[in-house]
Structures are given as structure tokens and as C-alpha cells.
Image (cartoon, rainbow, N blue to C red):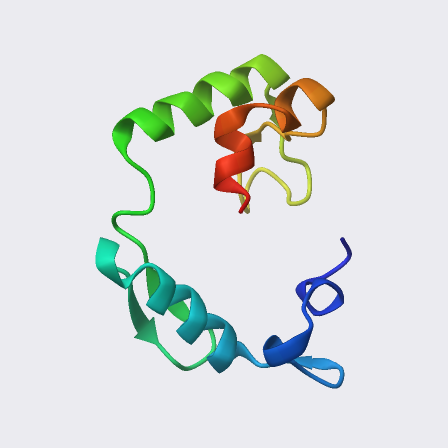
Length: 104
């Protein structure tokens, strides 16, 4: 994946550009029963998803991520953003039931 524009098709994409309004409206409406709402329709677009994941689900994601091994996120220098990440690239991670459900 090189960009969202490469991954989007249909109603999200108009030629070479992503239709952010369509994208955010669809995502927010699909989660409205969990309290999702659009906070800003100007760049940067901003949405809130308070019920996206339960505490138990977050704990499960952390457990799976720790199994993959944490590494320093090196896209930005530490003075800009200093975080650790875990990618779910392995077959073991991808085949986790929770990861499969989350990626749908």
C-alpha cells in the first residue's frame, strides 16, 4: 500500500483524488450506533469513534502486538514523534481471529 488513493475505488475516488467527504460519511455512519461523529469537515478531517473498541478488545490487540515484537517507529525523529509500534505482518498475526474481525 503506497497511499489511500491507491487502495480506494468506487465512491471514495474521483479520478486521482480521494473523495474525503464520501469516505468519512460512510465510516462515521457505519459506526453511528457506537457514538461515532464527524468533528471537522475541513482539512484535516476529524472524526471521533468512542465505541470503536472495548477495553478487552484493546487489551487483546496489545497482547497480539507484543507477540509480534515492538520496534521504534523511525519514520519521524524522536523530537517529532517518539513511539513504539508493532506491525501485524506475520502469518501468525494475520490469522488471529480478532485481527481478521478488526480488518473487515
